[in-house]
Image (cartoon, rainbow, N blue to C red):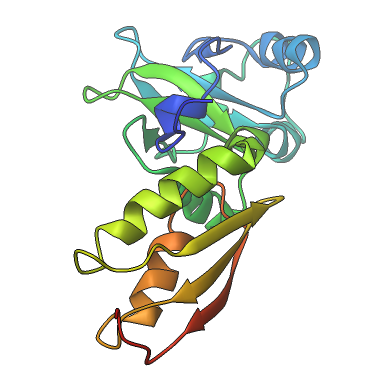
Length: 200
């Protein structure tokens, strides 16, 4: 499995959206057909100008004629909360948690819609094989250790990393743990290092 680091690595490329002039009932039908709770609203240039959600429909439709008078432009929430495809998965997760949001439109450098990322998409990093995670952890740790240091014992089970073995006295154990924890797909890090031991 390739490294999953950015939103562009995990997003869904096929996205349903609506234009500003889409009427109320068309929006409802699109949500029902595609089984989504929100739709990005696009300008003629394909830029995301807002998002219309089920909550927007329920609140704004009360007392209004929904035969066609209400359009996406009147119903949508602005500004839209979007994420660039180059954003890290961790950054997108934090943005989504602040909402709380279930899906985020993904945009390019010009603000045009290129995909959508959901909570389930962000969880894909936790499906990485344990051996892939272990290899990346080892590579990251080697960069921090002095040349000639004894190899560390890195084991991964269900995304949980266990660091064992001994490290040189000057090696920053806390930094080693941080590097391991930053590898995509790592659920937790258990440190079993022999602190304060020399490389010899």
